[in-house]
Length: 279
Image (cartoon, rainbow, N blue to C red):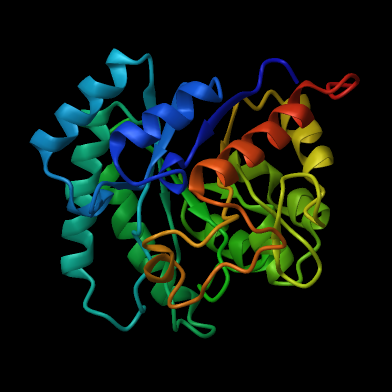
């Protein structure tokens, strides 16, 4: 799998940009999925700040691969026009930062109301038309698209939307990951590398029930190029907001975010580089 490149949510090593740069460089990673910088979520960053972030990253040979946005992490019952306006601002940031991918979600509290979900996501896709940025829906517990079946419903109804496949989230929703891959493979754009055990505790990549080695093999065999490391091995600032009040449960005790990030990066690199991995 030598052609697979690793990106990462480096804010899990530390929120300041200099800490993210340091974590990426010492692990030989040159791509960032940007989510938090300093005290700000990507949705709060200004265009001028985005230009400065891109300049500082470029100075260290790092590029932004994807926007790890919170788009779609609101109730389907919340007013949508302000959220759509926020998406348009983040899409502008994606273009400034040079990102070609944009991660989003499919709303809380939707019940079985697929039409409400797809109508809103359709507006998001329309707003992104012509931008050159690929929008990728992430499966996430408690949103509409939490299982493979529901993800497929969305993807069939919203042409042009792709998916970022997160195996740990499927495990936590009791969804077998290989069956999910077989169902969603035509729409998979890239992977989030996070793993967990049968109790829902996050573990090192490859040590859980996400079938990461096999998923990486299948992804590489179909020509997949980039995966994003998302360790989730420690509680980090902002996690409760991202996961609607939930906290990370992990099988480990790391002294800090740097140590957890480095352990996860090393585990992923071993899988990507192990002999026979591309067969």
